[in-house]
Each structure stands twice: as C-alpha cells, then as structure tokens.
Image (tube, rainbow, N blue to C red; front, side):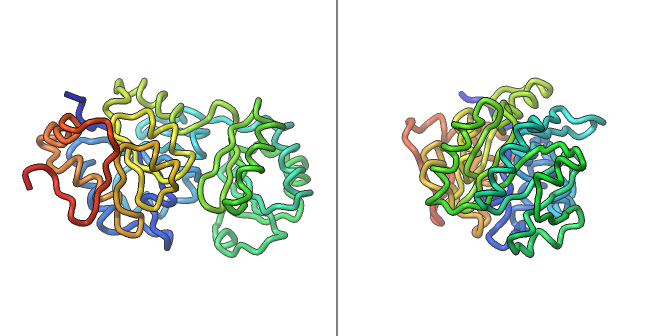
Length: 298
C-alpha cells in the first residue's frame, strides 16, 4: 500500500490558472477543502509571490511557496526563506547582453521582488503590475543599480526553443538551469534550482517522503517533479513530454483539471487511504481521465 497524499504541489500558469489567467471557483473550493482537512498545499511556479498575490488572496489560506522555479522557497510560519538564491551576477550580465543583441524579448525577476521588462517589445500585461519597470537596456540597468537577478524569462516560440535552450546550456550550463515553461516561454535560474530540488528541501523540513506527494503540472519545468513523486498528474493541456512523465492526465486548465484530480485522489479526506486503492490496483501503464471517469465503486 502506498502512502496517502499528505502534500499537494500545484503549478500555476497552465495548471491552476486557466487560459484567461484566472483560478476557477471549483479549483479554489477543492484546494480549501483539502487544506481544511489537513492536507498541505504548495504552489510551485516560475513567478515571484508579488506576481500572484491575487491568487493567494483567493485561496483563503497560506500555502507553501516554491517560486522562481525553486530559487525562492517559503514555508508559512518561518520568518526567513528556506531557499533564496540568484544567478551569478557576471553570468546574468552575459546572458542579458546576449538577449539584448539577439534581439529577444526578456524580463528579469530581481531579489527585491521587482520585475523589469524589455521596453523594446510591447507587452501590456506586464506594464500593469505595480512592481514592474521597463528598460530599453536591461543589462546596463542591472550593472548600474547592482541588481541581483533571481530569474530571466525569455519570450520564444515553441519551434525555436530547442536551439535557444541548447545554446544557453552550451554557453552557461555550468552556472544556470534552463527550461521551457510554456509554448512561448523559456526561463533561466541559478544552477541547482528546480521545483524538484526545492521540494526535497521542503520535505526534509516537514518530515515527509516523495511518496506522500501529489504534483500537478503542465510544462517541462514540472517534469523532474512529476517523475519523482508518488502521485504525478499532468494537465490535459500539457505538452506530450509532460504527459509522458506523469502517470495520470487530468482535464485541462480551462476545465478545472486541478479540482478534478483532487476529487479523484482525495475524495474523502477523513479516509484518504481510499484514494490510494486505485493506484494499488493498477499496473504501471499510464491512465487518463475523461468526463465520464469515476472512482472505483461509483
């Protein structure tokens, strides 16, 4: 018998957030339900907390935060972050200079919670955020203000991501981790940072095992995490590689796929062992849910 689900780790963009950038009432309700029943919840995202405060306000409780793809980790009740790292300043300057000359749209997350975007490209969604500045020359700004860069985000179409990721890894792979985090996004963080490694640190503090964890995600940056946990769930809108890494595929982010997965595996938090019987009775092949799916016995 596998351990019961004691911690649920949920990605944000493409997972908890729908295509309109919102969290459904259904997803919010299910997360609150399991939280109140004693199942811990963590948000694992490429964003910084200032960039999803509205989501945290909606939840009605304080989850564990794994931010900037593992470069910043905070546990409720602790005054200091568990992990708080940034990209080597010399390396960040080199990468930003390359992106400026490419030219490719990019933005940075700083260690003081600010987002600075490339002003050469119009992206109205970023300009509305109170913590955001725009610069025509991000590398010059970083050097002038001696900014520490926690993450670099790059806008690039899926068809061009492979060559760009290979180039970044060939040049700076010793100092950074690089992933595709969506159909139009590649992100760069300090070497050693990932959602999986951040989770390891969290589990050590909480006294939990990977087998206790359910993870839900949709992108390449979630794959390492999905391959490690006891209950790996890919969203219906995930890319093929992410689905392959998971054992189960839920509905899409526009169909409250997070809520569907939580109801499926944690149908009654008073008796969570019932949620594990499906896994124990199945072989190692992959399973998908459809609208007509039901738990055993229904």
